[in-house]
Length: 330
Ligand code: UDP
Image (cartoon, rainbow, N blue to C red; front, side):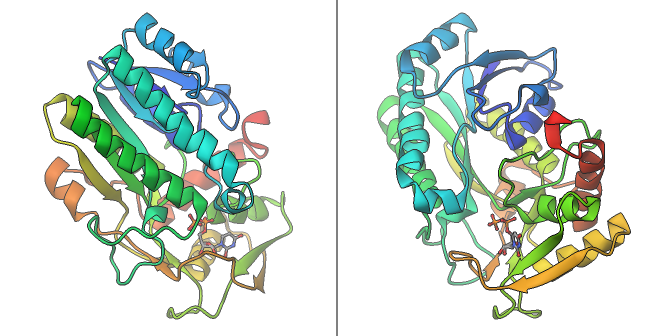
């Protein structure tokens, strides 16, 4: 089965490609415009096509050329702050891009899609842990675009017989166990890579955004999930669809909340570096607590996170950062 992986040169996509290529019967074909992805993140033995999901004609051409049977869809803009200052970019890249991808799938007779969604579709949750049937009230444009796409998937599935699995990730983190691929965003906005760059001396200090949240230590609680565990979930989702399973929406988290201070303390211990930390004002749009219930995917698909302790997440990410102090460029 040939699987087109849009955004397969990105952080999560490249990890999924590595897991997928080891699965008997699945061949990933990476489709990426390299706006944020890295060709170096794709192994030499994987077919890599430079292309843009907004280009229906070319996507259709690629689907025919490689006899694509299924799509795993990561290609998207994903910076929350940027989505607020430049919503047009997010509606074009995410909503229009996904619409055009679905059009190309429909025209090519490709019926299965696993979609990279986000916990940001929930917004500020009423209670915790968050289940899939909770209200979806995104507080930022990024989350809103992902929710619109989930709606499109539902409508296409109903009308045209496609089937989908939408995976709502909580905080993806960590790097491959072999440390050959990892997180390399420009600009970097995520907590763990920023901490590790500070431990390395590439940055001066770590800022804690907000110390007055209604949490035990005043800083935000997040549910960190190892990128290798996310990758496994995508393969399970694909097998579910191919095996005749119905369309589904699943949370992916480790079901445990860690505060910003706890992450910093663990990183100090793992790296052995006592780096500088400053306390700053809240970052706008950050809910106090985001913790998933992942019971649904555990029960239905048998997903079991294997690497999602904060220790292991930070250890693997640290190894990646040490091997690649300037990301893929050095
Ligand atoms: N955070 C922080 N300092 C930073 C970056 C992030 O205190 O330099 C906090 C942020 O406010 C949030 C948590 O760390 O509570 C995780 O943020 P991240 O951007 O990694 O992921 P998000 O939860 O926004 O998807």
